[in-house]
Each structure stands twice: as C-alpha cells, then as structure tokens.
Image (tube, rainbow, N blue to C red; front, side, top):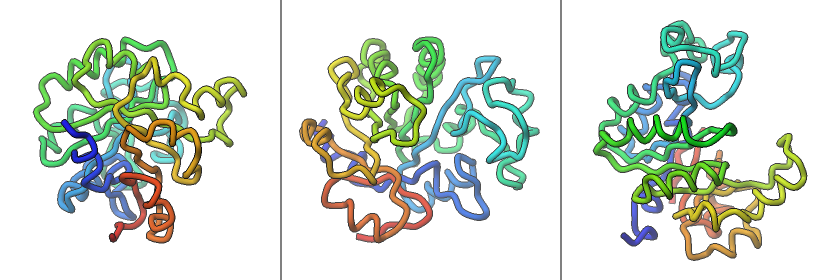
Amino acid sequence: MDIFKSWLVEKYVAHRGLHDSESAENSLSAFQKAIDKGYVIELDVQQIADGTIVVFHDSSLSRLTGQDGYLKNLIKEDLPLCHLSGTKETIPTFEEVLKLVNGQTPIIIEVKNILKVGAMESKLLEILKNYKGEFAIMSFNPYVLSWFKENAPQILRGQLSSFFKKDKLSLIKKIVLKKMLLNKVAQPNFIAYDANALPNRYVRKFNNLPLLAWTVRSQEEYMKVVKYCDNIIFENFEPKI
C-alpha cells in the first residue's frame, strides 16, 4: 500500500469526532456527525479498573463530566452515570464506538498508556481482531507502537510528538520524544506532530513518512500549516481547501 495515497492523507481527520456545543468530544453523536460528513475519526482509548477499554481523553473526570475522581478507578457499571458535558450521553466503551462506526469511515485510535505496555494493548488487539473497518493506532509512547509492531505488524502505527513545553516530563524524556529518537524501536508508518511546532528539523528527518498536523483549530491555522504536512487533525471548524 502506498500510504501517501491512502485514507490517512486523503480525508481530513476530526479530532475526537466532529464535536460541538451539542455533541461532546469522544461522544457517540460526535462520531456520528463525523461519519455523516465523511471525515476520518480520531479518538482516545484508555483502560479502566475492570479492564474495559473506554473512549475518553482525560485522566480526570472533572472537565467533561463535572465529577471528582479519575477515569482509571471506574468500572463498566459506572459509565452510564458519567454524563458528558451536561448532555444525556455518557462515556462510551470502545466496543460501542466500533459498533456505531462499523467501517463507515476510518478511525485513528490514540492509545493513552503511560504504564507498562502489554495488558491494555492485548485487550485492544483482541477487540480489533473482529473489526472489519479501516483503522490505525497512534501514541506518544513509542513502546506502544513497538508492541503493535511485534504483535500485529499489519496495523498502521503513528508516532505522536510535540515540543512538550507544558508537559511535566524530565528534560531527557522531552528531548527523546521531541526528536523521536525511539523511532527505530517504534518503526512508525506515519508521524502526527503538534501543528504549533511545524515546520521543524525533527520531522524533516522522516520525510519518507506521511505527516499529520494536530490539532488545527481554524481555517487560518490550516492555511499556515498545510504546506508543511500531508493532512490535518482538526476541531472547532471544518477545513476548506
């Protein structure tokens, strides 16, 4: 497959679905709106206390649900009680999202795992084995990509990165991740880099791979970054060529 001619670069990517004032990010209705408009869906997956894979971005529940506590401490039975952004929608499981999308549009799955790699990825792969639609995985953690390379090399892998200026990481980690020094371990099929840090010399080293810019939030930002990337991950507007 020529990845430069694939869906990864041919269709805009809706960040956490096509969310708006009525549909919360990473909600089933935001994903349905992305499907209806023909956008690729980007979403975040995490594992909760009972092993269930859910679609949710934050580690804390407060911003999106108004509740105290952390996502990792929930069990599946708690999910119907966690309403998203004051709507009737609740935190969906990954399996619920796949059932909704059902191959109607491709999905980019951000694997949010800063712990030991293996258990969550195994569960995720088990679910994906029965899914017939197009998808890719990506992560800031290069060891997540390495795990998928070893256990499911047919799945497209994307390395997420940025300059990590506001992240609470050691200087060494920031340098390694910013420069993507572990790409030999991860062996990604594409790069997804912070749009605010483009262009830069680190992504130029990997110009043999498609480059996605995240997260583009206006037509003006899109016009600034489009000449440096192959596609964008967007929110809060709909891009026009």
